[in-house]
Image (tube, rainbow, N blue to C red; front, top):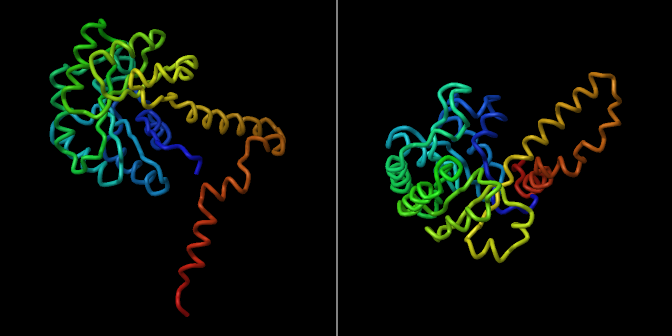
Length: 260
């Protein structure tokens, strides 16, 4: 509807919006994510990219997840190289517990072998740049690139984003998906093209905006505020009809009436 070419579903957003669960502990399972993707793909017309955390602890779990996501129309699958902490507050950060590099390479190869459709994009997401010395992180990234994945995702690498992107591009020519680009880098098209940066992630700001808008609106009304004072926050009837595809469904009904 709005013209975006890729829809990205972050694991943290899926857990928060669909299940009201935090990202920091393993309280969801693969079936949860597959079902969410099925419902999203029922209503969108763009490619869906999904973050599936570590994709599973065994080869069979990885195999099943890739097959199930393909079955519901997912176009790109992002696999992280970190473990979800077993308890809240048990790790320095959500992505600080890295899976051994050789184990992660095997997992990526398993995902590639599991896919039925060669056009399904497998993306290796790595937190190595923020958790390891640069030479070690680059060796890990080079190994991931050699596994046969189609792209790399680099999260949380500010404030040294430019130099780290250049360092990664020196060890692999794979397309990069990056979180943390400054406005200066976004406007530097030559830099992005030269270093194979293909997708810029915003980092889920829309989810936060939606939560705050709903919360603030309810607090306003609870405190006795007037409903019409929230008019600027409300979707117009035209936008609501576009979201629910009222016009499309009405046209379909007219074109395919039941015989009398």
